[in-house]
Length: 387
Image (cartoon, rainbow, N blue to C red):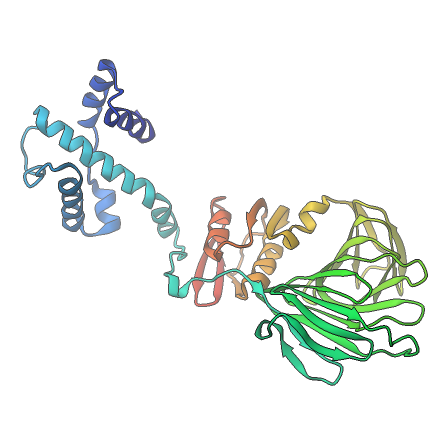
């Protein structure tokens, strides 16, 4: 009988639903259990303390005096059997709850940090730089108008969204003021531009844009990663400039990933169409496609992708589908604002899975450790990756 089967059968016994055959099976099995074997003693190193704790719990919960339970008397007495079964059940329950902790300790990992040292997920956090160079910490401002400029007012409409409202007096201004929204590592934020375009900025990203659009195009400059839902305006195409590449659209939904520490820039189209241009090549994307551009490559590489995986960050998830460990750790580093270090000769395996970005970093790392091919050690805000 497995320990899980024993637990199930014992729960049935406690509820009074055991058949006579099941009761006999329970009686015959309990003699085979080793309550505190050598492995427990080696791991915990304090057998007497555990015994005392278990006895106290049995005394409190059952009213049975267990002072003599651990003495070398015959375990075949009926009155002692059931007290011992209770003891076994409590012990096994403790073993199950600590099983994962023991596993990580044996593997040399150190993820069991206390609350004070825990690493929480990112927050709605951003800084706004105005045209005059003044910087505003948006989280410090109450909802409402936080700045005004020629052509638009800047409104904080929630803890996660900044919106621009056009005042209509920018028509004759061919060079409207520009603002820059910067999201640090461990942050995420949204903005609605004066034309109604909605933009989500991921961690370690920034976007520079005019407070109101004028002329023949709507041009913004991106560093990092952002998801765009562009308001349609066939008379004024929208253009995203990123690392020497232009993304031209009329109205569409797409994601741009172009961090400076990434070798490849990726543009993923969800709706509409976009035209990609660089000094060395061009490409046209249709929904469901991703265009990749590397500085050392003359052309764009276009391929179909699962768009839901690409934009999962916007909806609060990590989704990895056969993603190399180094790329995964870059995402974790940005979101949790930690520094990641790889030990020499670390494996280059790829991983897949889905997990909420609202979890403590330990939950994410433990999910990766479940594969058995990688382990982590946390030291302050440093994560060390080990085989």
